[in-house]
Structure formats: structure tokens, C-alpha cells
Image (spheres, rainbow, N blue to C red):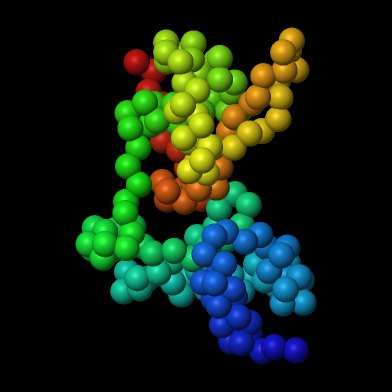
Amino acid sequence: MLVRDEIKAAIEAILFVRAEQIELDELAEMLELSPVDIKEILEELMEEYNNPNRGLQIVMLDKGYLICTRPEYGDILAKMGKTTPRRLSTAAMETLAIIAYRQPVTRSEIENIRGVKSERVIASLLEKGLIEERGFKAVPGKPILYGTGSEFLRMFGLSSLQDLPVLGED
């Protein structure tokens, strides 16, 4: 049985190597501990990482946990040349906002709001992992429903969709 500090170190190693979110249950299974124990240890780790002197942070997303760089170092990291900051077109941001606030939503509903075709933009957002298919709407033709993915939360530094800014009533 691993001691608490070894468990913390193992979680750090797993999060680092995975380089994408991992669910609590999967971590618990890998470390042969209960999800309750893993969650408690993750909360301790997150508190330790939540220090302005650290370059990394552990964030909780809708479906799991992820180790990533702190957003305030994005400009410095962009100078490395290895990473390129993701830039989204105006059309992509517009489509992403519609999906984030109205999900689950169909392509035709998005197009009705935007007033233009959105096939390519949706395909691009799917490819980037910012949105995902969420099933089919129970209407004739059964159109695909779209919602945001975990990459959306990570990219915008959100823990959950409840962290989205409230829309104005303009």
C-alpha cells in the first residue's frame, strides 16, 4: 500500500503522462484506492498547486482532472515555438458561444441563429475537440445534437459550464 505522499506523486505522474483529463474512477482503479480517497488527495494537490509561484495547476473539469500550465504564462510559453496558441475565427467563436449557451443544439438551430451555413465551422470545432456530438434530437430526420467538450472547458479555463459568464439581456 502506498503512503499519502507516494499517492500524490503517483497522481502527479499519471496526470503529467496522460496530458489530458482523467476521470476520478480511472485514477482510483489505477491506484487501487476508493474514489473518495483519491478525490481528497486531489483536492490537497490542487490546493498545493494553487500558488502563484507555481507554473502548473491541476484543474477539475466536468469529467475529470488535468494538469496544465497556468494561464498567466501563456504568452511566455507561446515564445517557445513548440506550442502555438489556438486562435479561433470569429465564425468559430460565434458558433462555439451558441453551442455553449444553448446546448444541446442542432446544426440547423445554430444556422438559424447565425443566419449562415455552419457545416465547416462545426466540423472544425469537432476536430479540435471543442464540441462533441451528444446524440440525436427526437424529431423527424433525427439531427445530431452538439454540446461543448472538455477541451472547451480547458481552453477557456472553466471548471464547468456553470462558470460561463451570464448573458446580458440586450
